Length: 173
Image (tube, rainbow, N blue to C red; front, side):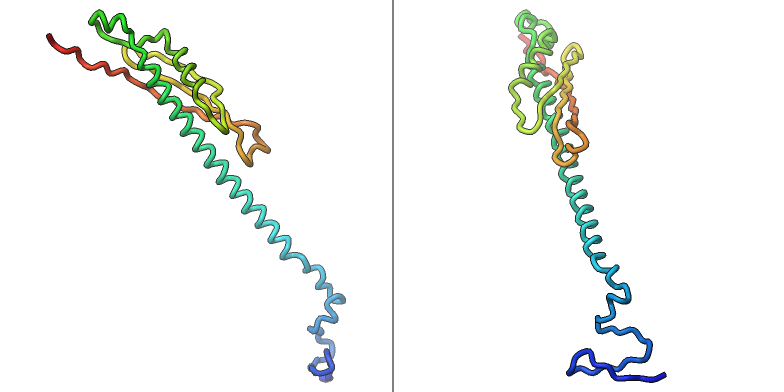
C-alpha cells in the first residue's frame, strides 16, 4: 500500500491511499452521490402535508363539536318556547294546566325562523308532545366544513331537548 500526497487546494495538502475515495467533493458526481440530493426536501414536504392534515382535522373537528352544541342550544330554547304556550282556557277555568300541543310545531318553526346563524342553517325541526306537561324538540343544523368541504359538501348536526311546563300548585282559598 502506497500513500501519495494530493492537494485539494494549493494551501491544504491531504493524504490519500491508492484506491481510496476522494472526500473533497470532486469525485461525488462520479460516485453517484447526486441521487441523494433533494431527499431532505421530500421528507419536509411529507411532514408539511401531515401537519396540514392534522390542522384540518382539528379545525373541522372543532367546528363539528360547535355545531352540535349549537343545535342542542337551539333545541333547548325552542322547547322552552313551545312549553310556554299554556292552555289559557283551562288555566282560567281552574283546571290542570297543560301545554297547548296543537301550536307546538308552529311555535318551534317561529322560534327557528328568528334564529340567525352565520355559518350554518337550521334545515329541520320536529316537535313531539309528551302530555300533559312536556314537549320535545329536535333540531337539524346543516353546515359546510372548512377543509373537509373538499370531500363532503355539507354535514349535519342534530340536537334534541325536552321542556316541562311547571305551573305550580294552585293556591288554596
